[in-house]
Image 1 (cartoon, protein in one colour):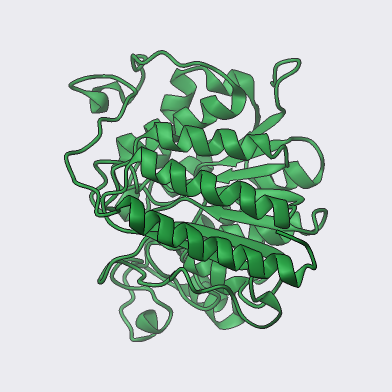
Image 2: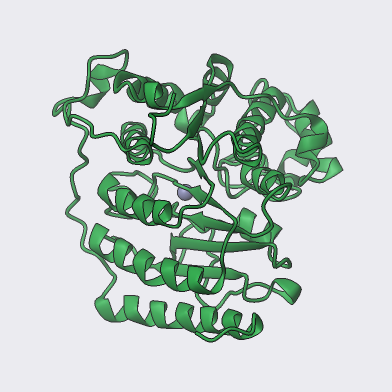
Length: 375
Ligand SMILES: [Zn+2]
């Protein structure tokens, strides 16, 4: 439970959710590794643990198309037919056994967390097993089968009018951005690496949304090798400026771990300290906030990151020595919570960061004009 004066935090976890998430091929056992580390640091004593309620078919259809949902329901691991390609199922999103129960549980976990905020039960809610930001309305993409984030934001709209979505994953949050591209009801803000050939290849700084949703989308691209100082600089330069113009009623923060140094897919050079700073800034805004996981293909580093963020949310200092627990051997040879910075040189210069910030600030200025406010 929460401490007397500390924030009220709901943490979604249960054995079935972990078992199903553990089976996703690219991140096999990551859910259990993460959960075990958080337990080992006794962080669950500081939160209200809530089991996930699986999403219904109707819940999933709140965003996904009927055809895609039908396909997910009937997909079987040994079936090889052309339809798989049509729905984005194939190379990076293989059909696996129990796919439908898995996606319902993951989506349901984020909906459970969102409901903890809409019911007023918690100020902060956490689902480290959600955050699948690439899934599109009618297809899987980039290891994401259903977009639990879009579904959770829809749930938040039951109570909160204006939702700010912040995406810290190394990849562009394209699925969430596309879902809300035409609406002013969600402000999406994605920080991501943008390089030729780097997935998904979208999220230019000039992309600001369409139609009624124009200026309610912000993109902050950076180059390979970004470090803590540069990332925090980007984040601080934009978040407060945006929140002076757009006052969110609730926040969703996708904390993908793949910009952390040592990730085999991302190209970033961050450590959990960068996220700690970002989380502190988000906490300063004092809004109900949903924290979600996302990418993170160095499983130990992802577990470390989400443990550090959980500790930052509940205001608890952690010992740097990894406690003895089920997955302890994975943390060798140092057995420390810290993540070392890599040798990779940042391709971001002060000039390139400032140019990006200036463009994004101009975009925020246009939103301010639209809202009839002075910047
Ligand atoms: Zn990612």
